[in-house]
Image (cartoon, rainbow, N blue to C red; front, side, top):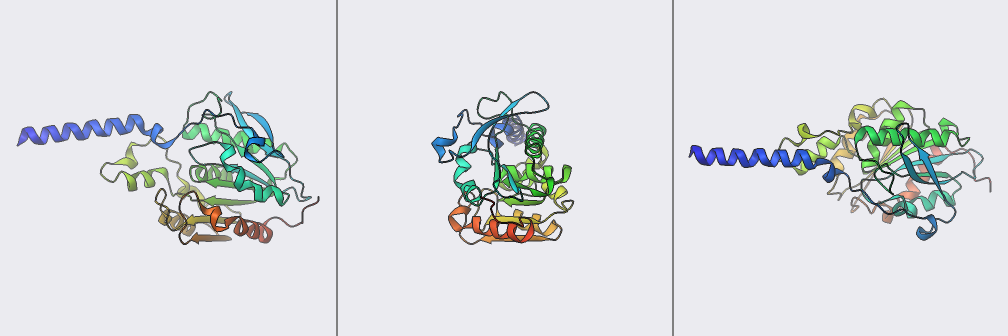
Length: 272
């Protein structure tokens, strides 16, 4: 019996070591594709290279706002794919005259970097500064975070001035989500990158909209509910019956977002 117990303990320790070493490959899924806007139905956007403070050049897509109020989406996407995969989402906002910056990460599009929490925050800060440099007032920046990107959005919204925050399929922290999926190990304590949005969300002082699919099995809706409960007013939430993790736009959440912005931040119709 002692031999069996020792063998089981050894296997378990090896599993913990494997998960610790492989954690970033489980969280992040780099894409080497260098997407061009025209191939994704976004020929009205342009590729811009944004330099980070630590020397990386982010492959991003930009279109300036045509609205006289200059309202602009600062869009942080999820852990997989590239900015082109989100073109169908931002089409709704481009057509309404909003500015959009689709933010590429240091580990995508041959930018040369490796993924990490600190690195993505640096990417987010560089993107924020780019938008501010395009004559967009801080109060007209919408920090939009999708899935993994929701942690970047909450960070940016607590370290910079913004006008509103939209969180699509957000989490309380990566540790909480990891613990749900890897319940048989102390996953929360193994993580290097935590993205603790729950700790930050209560310090966001601008309107917040939380969007989540009730059928999301990647980041269960309970995390969105907990995050929403911890947020300050003014806040709104839209939990989509039948919605999953990546299909909320099939349920018309773009209309929910546009209505939210009309009531909370964007005060003028499109100028063009």
